[in-house]
Amino acid sequence: MKTLLKNARLLTMDEHVPDCENGWLTVEKGRITALGPGPEPEGADEIVDCRGGLLLPGFVNTHCHAAMVPFRTLGDDCADRLRRFLFPLEQEAWTRELSFLGTKYAAAEMLLSGITTAADMYYYEDAAADAFVEMGLRSCPGETVICQKAPGSDTPEEALTRSEALLRRWAGSEWVRPLIAPHGTTTVTEEYLQKCMALAEKYDTLLTLHACEMDDEMRHFAERGQTPVSFLDSLGLCGPRLLAVHGIHLTESDIALMADRGARIATCPASNMKAGKGIAPIRDAERAGIAWGLGTDGPSSGNTLSMFDQMRLFAVGQKTRYHDRRLFPAREIVRAATRGGARALGMEDAGALVPGFRADLTLVSVDRPSLFPLWDPYSALVYGAGAADVSLVMTGGVIRVREGKLTGADLSSLRRDLEAVLVPFRCAAEKYRDVLS
Ligand SMILES: [Zn+2]
Image (cartoon, rainbow, N blue to C red; front, side, top):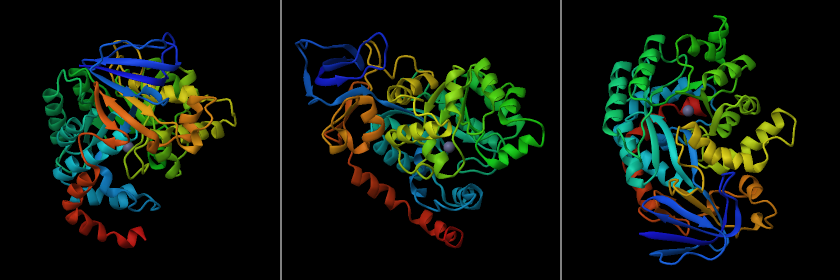
């Protein structure tokens, strides 16, 4: 099966493969086989007319809690909601079924906004992995390891067992590449952080956790004369396997240490700014050569699972933090949302339009009023476009979204399925009305 996408503006994200205004691209066996300007090749089994839209690599979401859809808009403005009702509600009412159906819904939302790969951490990630596969979204799922009773695991030991089972089950898969996901620097003991790292090493995968995010986390380490990064380093966790999420309060010496150790960062601007937590010093991380990518965080943290929102908020956040309009030109941000994210997740053959790379593609229509004229297509993507402009999405050479609609699933059925299992969760949530209002 050979697919030809023609009449597209190609944004390749690769310095050796030039962008072109009226280009074509071919896909075979899940990989990009050729692309360029000029005459289109013959012999395609399927031809897609891109009608002048922007064809770019699919977005790579480096941090998410996909299944948390039922929490969306619940207590958005409530202080310390993590401990006041998120943890209690999860312990009381979260189920495997919610993980499966919540992840399916989230995967649909991500595909519809042009995301083709997502790193995920939550509970019952075996069910989440199944949901991602069913929907055709590439994933890096990690079972959350936390030192308190949690959905699916009464103890962190059980969560580790679940993590290992996930790694074994998906060994060698192109679609599911599990990672190890301890919750955070203060919610997991030193012993279990080290056990997590031992597992990441045993299975040669990444370890991701929330770090340098919370005020109480920063106080906890400051009282001990440490930072979260120096603490992780003292345990042997700060290395090329580490994908630290948020990094809002990274210091200069943290950044130097992470760069030296080859650690990575996932930054989630929509979530961080909505919570009033701050803006991560990504300019400095970038200058130090740290691999970093953008993440949506969960549906209740950043509310949308759209990388367009992350790109725009990242841009305005960095420019404001450093009082410098020239920082992060739009092309660099689109690159971070695609190839940068792939690099942060250790995927070297994704995130760019290059022959041999995975055919994970997003086509953005430029028909809407805010996308004219197109002096700079990258600027249009960062500042003028949104999920509603995504017209076609392909993962592994298969078209998952066409004309802005899912090809293999129906969004309203996914919503109905999730709604049907939501009743006990809704009842449990009612108990927190007083906290939330
Ligand atoms: Zn998170």
